[in-house]
Image (cartoon, rainbow, N blue to C red; front, side):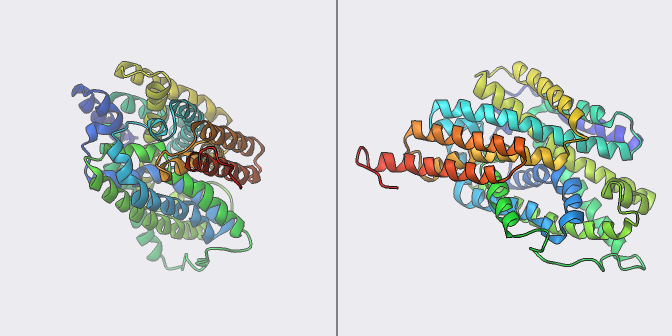
Length: 438
């Protein structure tokens, strides 16, 4: 318990320190555009290695085997495209949020639509992080872990904004990696081979090419066009820093993916009863006390570093792009409001798990915003604005259907529909009033 109090005080200290500096809107939203490549890279890694990449990914390894790694590899693939194709271009715009990029490349209406879609989707993502935080704190024997974790995340994010989030991400990711490497070393030192079940394969009977395609398409797209990752690009001190930071983030994601999946196999070997939480129960109980606490602290750091990013992203977009407010006090109030709403969603967490929330959010966002904006940037904004809006609305509707029904075919239909209308919007401008044959 003492270590948790110290950890919370540390986060509050970072938030309060930046709060005292009285920075303006750019300080709260994009850390005064002062972050170097190392901070950008660490912040990207910390933001991406959250509930889905720890608790959720390990659970998927138990279900699918080694191919579960595609959850993060698909993200790394998408992030690579963001780095090489979009990073410098995005930083050059001087934008503060992803919806603002929609206005630059599509229209003012697209900015509003994207802001609303992101706001709705990010409630689900933040709820997933809160649920995961509760699981970790429960392993520390903390009652009401979800609400306690939510309070800590909301308060320090509300105080320091993006500047505090990026600063804390560096320390949190280091804790994550140190804890995971320490656990792996302990596993390798055991007299029994815990990795006899390890079979390196990227496709199998349980995880076919259809799922790989789904991960690359939906998960990969989300890492190309992502409001949280965009905020990291916007926070870089210049265009080259944005590019280098993104590349550093890719390397870190790939390394983390293999590390987590390998540890998952060792943990599965320890789980004789084939039940319970693999990381927070099975592995924690098997580890020496000090190493067990380090593991839980690493998992907690991973989740909080994603949760604070989700929170500042969603609340900032709603205030800046929907309410059109540049008042930092308003922004801070909505950090609190968004945290409260996401906490309410966690009430349904027993039936709707971590990855379910994340998949639902990705379905809506990837089909409603990502696809259209991807083509808009590729086409350098030379598209018919009304048709692009149609692409966003129709694609988003399909994504929402996929999220509600659980049938992923609607996600594919949404991406295809949004792509079709986006290309049509480009051809409409390119060929003017001439008849277009599709």
